[in-house]
Image (cartoon, rainbow, N blue to C red; front, side, top):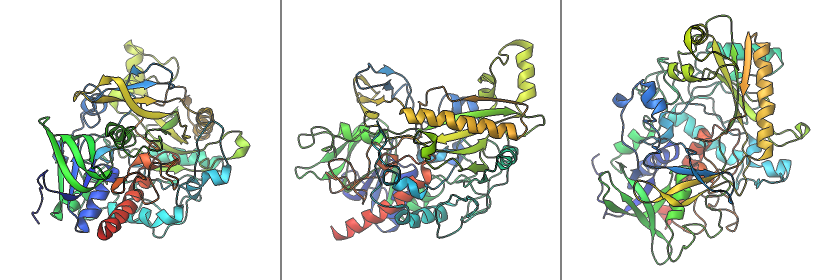
Length: 547
């Protein structure tokens, strides 16, 4: 079909802002259902031929992520502190968003994540809340995401997994040395590691080829289309319908509203920095957990003086991020960890919050390498490891192929003062207010990090490591897991989005990304974000048919 592209002056059914994990799914579902859709993506429209294994360009210069030179952000530890220019927020900046270069972990949230306040009660200093629905309500959409996108895994292998309607469509990826050693140490301690569910193809699926184990996966785009990014999966389906236009290089500055308080479209700068306005019957904001609240706050008007959809004052508040801990180990024999995907084994034994620990929190653990040659060369290995000269060269030679990592993905409590707001002084390259992050970890998040760090050290020791060291003292920012800043809930005085993914204040404004998550689970939010996107698109279609 060849209906798209659309003219900005032409009123389409939906404008979708952002084309990442959520936006790509929403665009595909709506366009397949017959609605006209324009996707506005601030980054370029890269194809597989554009991806490279250039570690310096991709991992150091950030060719696939937001550019702090043109889009600076500021950071402060509390609302009364002075914000300093400092990278704090990271996200994918191209068609497909972060799904293009993410690690591929694809965990479902557990049942408790949706009703944690009811189960554990209030947590002092946090704003813990239940979701407006339960895991069982989202399960069909988890299943749809896994089947539609192509997820590799082994259903039933995780003894703590919530019920599922179908197995994964593809078998798990082959286990790497890190997975074998992780499994060895964990089972000695009576724990239950299992094959990692990943958004990477272990076998050919729906016309895409299987992973070739090139080793350049996390942070890199996949030239084989084996990574199940929205770029490789749902976006081509959306474009093929003829109902969807992907408009790259479109930097949205405001969602326009009419006198009745309804969204009428999006004002954006095109690639030549000309201001454009795309008209639409409804708007879906899928920009991510930082840029979505920033856009809403920039979209203030006489009717919405505190920002769009912000009568509650909650837009931008309750920021949850990637709280982590790491343990490293050196082994006697070569591991060949530089080959293949990052993660092949995961453990959820410490996932659930346990009052006996004396604090709220839990974590999932995965085994990986975490390095490429440049990053390994620049890393601080164990304390006192050589950094110069012959000893440094020998250390690189001896250890690059004998080191692995355990990564702890910890809970992040929502705290109302942790937030995304507009910096009153710093501007981006378009003259718009820079994104300002306010963040200090909840005390229980810090305790969780050290608790999980100690468990990972025990596992490495049980696996027979020659040397073990760890890290969890460093700041958790900058973060790429951005959640909670436009939370879902029934009460319009406390939440930004209702249970149908629509803003309480604006009847034709839908918010679908990490910002609407009520709890953080144990990080790895992509599966939940995409399940929500499938659910939201269904609700949006229902709304459009009866309006």
